[in-house]
Image 1 (spheres, rainbow, N blue to C red):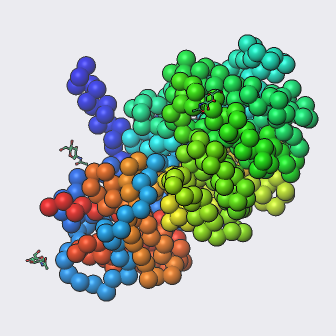
Image 2: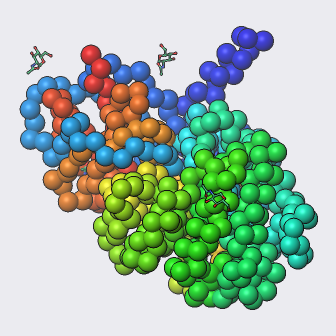
Image 3: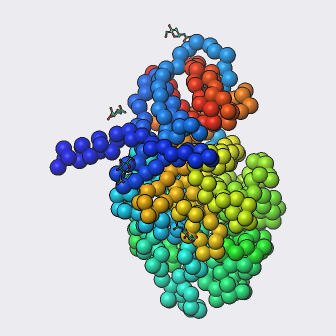
Length: 504
Ligand SMILES: *[C@@H]1O[C@H](CO)[C@@H](O)[C@H](O)[C@H]1NC(C)=O
Ligand SMILES: *[C@@H]1O[C@H](CO)[C@@H](O)[C@H](O)[C@H]1NC(C)=O
Ligand SMILES: *[C@@H]1O[C@H](CO)[C@@H](O)[C@H](O)[C@H]1NC(C)=O
Ligand SMILES: *[C@@H]1O[C@H](CO)[C@@H](O)[C@H](O)[C@H]1NC(C)=O
Ligand SMILES: *[C@@H]1O[C@H](CO)[C@@H](O)[C@H](O)[C@H]1NC(C)=O
Ligand SMILES: *[C@@H]1O[C@H](CO)[C@@H](O)[C@H](O)[C@H]1NC(C)=O
């Protein structure tokens, strides 16, 4: 039996190539029940040896090459400095929406396993963070809550079929693949039961009636208790998904809170409820809304010491980032307390609801670049992790009960029993696979205008340099780390991750 187990491990470690297909927008890798590309294993590097992974618009799939740096001085175009240390990385991941579960569940068991391995396994991109909706979102088959009938005691609170079919089993499998503690989960709520609201609706303009704040906070605790019974423990909770939505009346299920209401909700209900419970160590993440709105958070919410007392971090969404600089992220600084910054949601294709774009643009390299642009900007501004929206959607970007279909790094075709790993998957993977939790960002600069660089020191001592060549031409770059330098060939339109050992 032991021997068999040994061979099984060896066989899953084999380097399986991407079966690449291409559309006018770019490439994607096809996976089915018997074939799915893996990330070539990390090599054991000795002093000055490097391994370079590349995925490009021409060639996806973490192409791995290796070489050696030397102590000769080159005209260096990229400088990595071990002297400056910035934020410690929490991790990268995606959301366990109902639709993610519905799409994964629509595949054969073997195909499901390969999909989960792609995200969470040791041959995949090693996601280490997951977001779990408290109840339904628009990426559900309908609006619902855990207590649809008025019940001021919440005795009838109950997890739904969606949890038992589409969320809990997947989370349990992801936790197993990650070895339990290596997957940090945080929860976010969209809409309260409609009887707690002023509109009797899940979406549109709507707010939780203040007399129900305590009950709505108790509902959160019930959620954590019920998930704990299923073996799912949480690391964090956000104060509310996109509180702006209920103020501007979007069709996404919501609870609107203006800044005054948000402060009251946190300091009178959610904060005390969490801190007085067995879940008191949960990280409380404020905002969970657009970067564009951070000036309001700064001036109207973070000025309240009581609120800040309950807060551990600030969550940001990327949907309006084109309008505002990364420096907006620095607005979350408060005196006397360090609040972490976490990117809690982003996706491509969201303009589809306005009829401006296709929800799914299979193979799109430019959508991978949208992800990269967000990740580079966020991490340069001390964000500790980047969490994607749906992990798997269907060919038209659903299901979504308000027809707000969008794109996802993995698109599922249940009729063919196949799934497609898009450039967005590789873009995220070039971080999540290598910039492992606990890595610390270190200084780096590039003199080349179309080459973006970020560097990290991993807990195992390896240096990681992520290099994004935006240019249409391949580039050869001289890169120096410490007193070592080397020359790297980066393909055109590519995302690359370099691992370098400085251990003598
Ligand atoms: C999966 O794809 C490979 C390569 O195209 C093919 O050889 C294999 O038959 C496919 N497997 C299934 C179950 O369709
Ligand atoms: C790296 O070294 C470890 C321990 O010596 C060994 O088990 C592993 O197979 C090596 N990995 C590679 C890719 O050579
Ligand atoms: C550079 O490396 C060579 C041999 O690899 C060694 O002899 C030399 O001392 C090194 N120079 C410096 C400045 O470290
Ligand atoms: C615990 O609850 C009590 C009573 O509601 C409240 O006064 C106190 O501030 C709460 N503790 C914390 C840490 O929030
Ligand atoms: C995907 O989901 C949408 C609902 O958002 C549905 O209308 C469509 O039929 C689904 N497509 C496939 C291929 O299942
Ligand atoms: C980026 O790709 C282009 C096109 O292949 C190439 O000419 C250029 O040298 C690459 N840039 C870097 C920095 O490697």
